[in-house]
Image (tube, rainbow, N blue to C red; front, top):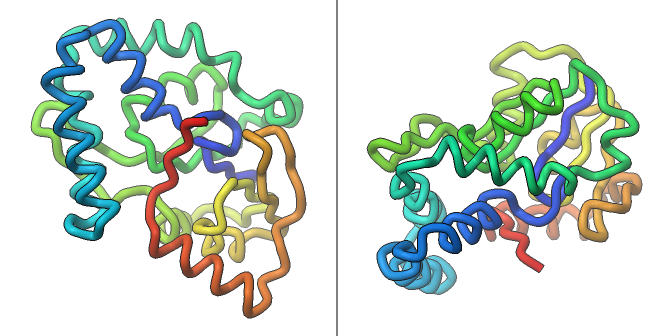
Length: 209
């Protein structure tokens, strides 16, 4: 079984951020009801005044403000499915597993189109709360272990924060260059372990370049 991170790994940029921009363009009222709130909370998060989970819960709140969510997510993936990395499509297998910190409601439609398995962060769009742990960093390895998945042959991620899961795989790869370049996971010497630790502390990666 091969396991993949999603955002920044087989898709670039971050699907949750890109979909937020998509929704604000199509629902301009979000620029007044959502954008100021999330901008303020981003500052609070970056300055250490609120924890990561709280920032992300508020960041994902735009998902609760869209009456035509099913229509918009379908149209979104109609346009952006082409951003799935070519290298991944060449090696895709039916038993692939995608593990993503993005919400299930965003990841599920594209995972079904790809015909692969997935696990993402459960976010209740009615109440605006997480209903399970954020599928990030060590939570991914905990999920694999708790659910008794078979041995991971290959693991792919764009972030050293996924080192706990990389260490569970027979072979791990680090994806760079906007999800275009795949190289061997770096040797985990003392310096690399420090970098991985910093990634675990700094939280969720948001790619929007």
